[in-house]
Length: 429
Image 1 (cartoon, rainbow, N blue to C red):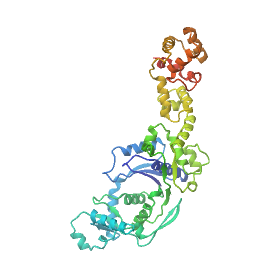
Image 2 (image 1 turned 30 degrees about the horizontal axis):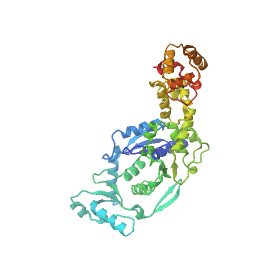
Image 3 (image 1 turned 135 degrees about the horizontal axis):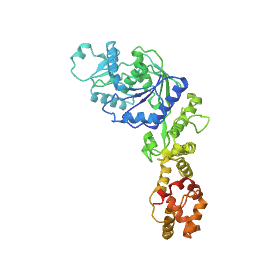
Image 4 (image 1 turned 180 degrees about the vertical axis):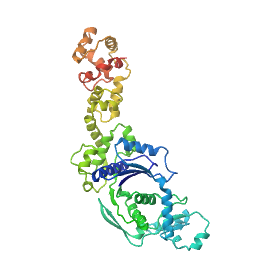
């Protein structure tokens, strides 16, 4: 079983989505169940409604799953297993104050050493522990031996007991820490493969140590993906948010395409998730950090817009007419997102002023079109206006273009007309 673990404390970002997509692809490839886990154990940091937003986004990307798990529903198990560790002397109560811990961290920094807890509370007798009337956390004792981590992408790592440390598994309020809850949940739900960010690789040996301490011997296949460097973040922080990219007018299929393509030796540039399942191999992913290029995403999005069904595109643009989808594709020479196409369509259907320097001509054309019959061909359309107004050449085409598109240049009117001829009553108001 594989799991997509997402936190309701923030927007889903590009790295979150990339991990979700690869979980989906691998689960399909090896025919294993995929579950979604909402890591909501820290109630104080959860954002109301963020879990629903996450699930809606995963649905938008057509990421199929068998069930949804809320981590907060397992807190009793987390606490019960922590008590088991304490009973077995594998974990202990820690009464150290934040001030004391800050002193230890400061001292380690001044000595140029990595911070490690000094295990002061690990050595307290049962009598002393019973006498202490103060809030405490629960720490798991550091391992005796090294912890070996085998990562399918990055190879083998060995972590010393000090690398792991005696870390906190239950907070003062007895809620589980993120690392402890994650390790226990992966054990409870028999997770076989975990995909995570490379920057979080030190969490994996801690998870292994927790499960080893609980007597769980089954190995989990770990894959830690290289970091995504977003070179556009300085210009616009929203470009790291999946929700914001959707709102910007990017297609989910295009975003998924680009995130799977990033740092991957793919057989082709444009593909769907279903196609990726056929050829995807973890070994083909680069171990080096990758750069998210907003312009590259726009290029990929444009190609998917070109491929999308005309009626489907029309509905995404707020219509239900394949002709509007075809019209939208005409604008892809200068547009690459749904929003950019919508801007051009909105101009067509907006109320327009009279064309500058052609005010009289504009009035004549408007009057003529309000009385015009349905005309199939553009040349016949022009001919009809000329016959009824006497306008031709620039005196006709300049104001006519403006009245139909609210632009003085762009796609040829002869190309646009076939798709707007049924809407002239709405366009010429």
